[in-house]
Length: 52
Image 1 (cartoon, rainbow, N blue to C red):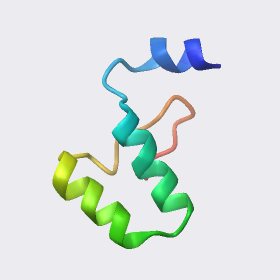
Image 2 (image 1 turned 120 degrees about the vertical axis):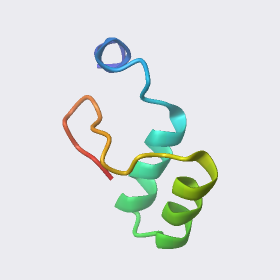
Image 3 (image 1 turned 135 degrees about the vertical axis):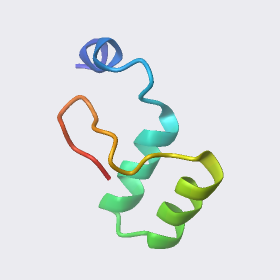
């Protein structure tokens, strides 16, 4: 499924993945820091159609 994710969205980054993980692990401080420091978009969809 990794190749599927790569072909799905070239602008999906490790930072986006970390943001999704932080949300899943209920770490609001980490979520906020990632959004602010990395300029991430919390509504961006991953290969499975999930967003932070």
